[in-house]
Image (cartoon, rainbow, N blue to C red; front, side, top):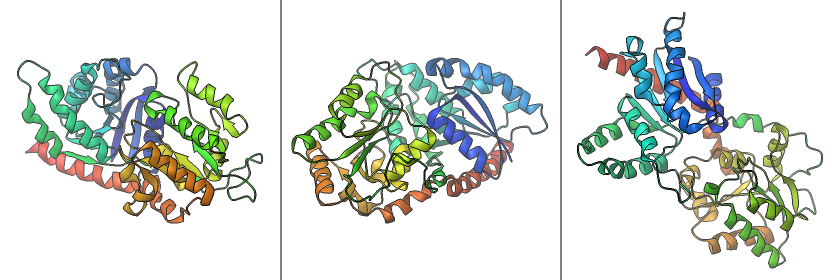
Length: 377
């Protein structure tokens, strides 16, 4: 089957997801993409640009049989501009994130972008979310969006939308973490005499809430509890002050600071002992899954998507409900030993593309057959 994956914001997790599925699928997955810049303009204008590419695809030797679009495109505009070709084309709409429940950092929410997500869902036969938490957050907030308008709020559309929605976890290229990394300056995990290595591998942005993370480390340091620290991840700010301050404060403990190359990042995952999140926003958590799969013991909030990433047996051990809970757990691990995560690492394997791609393929095959029948009836 020819699946055309439409992604106007090809960067970061969007890129890894699109390219990962194209690589591991048994179907012919063709990518129609744009560079990952100017997200607001992509949501407004990406459909106009990619409509020409989609029209050309229909005139090629491998025309689309199913369209897989992401939340960064206006599906209604895309279909309107290609209606000669797409009138009977099944569409699956994938939510990596949404523009209703994404944190705004105190700014007034611009409802127009949430509206684009909503009408794109209306125009799609299948609606997919990258976690149960994400799906529930969207449908909890959607009535408030529609009630915002003065009349003809169309609240009756929510139930049909939910009925054709389901969770399809993003695949992660975990198999790339199996081979040992070549990074001589960073000793392997478990080396005698080394203090545990704590890892931050999230974006350097407000929604990952780095301040409590550094507060935890400050409190540990004040108590004389020793550790090593690796701070990886990307920053889209010129001066991420909390990170620059931490670089000075913990300079004697830091083994890595800043962006990591592919090999460096693999080594950090394989040689760190503990991965911590203090995020206020996480629709899935690829960085966390990668770290756990590589053998890190997680310390995560008991909220967002994290409870569904970990098996229930690990909830009490690794999910905290308050700052004090997190501190107590971390102090115990650093003084008494980090729990063995062999069984937990194996659980993360369910997110590997080598397993999930088959689930994607089967679902899209079912979509194609069911929706083609629906179009003809």
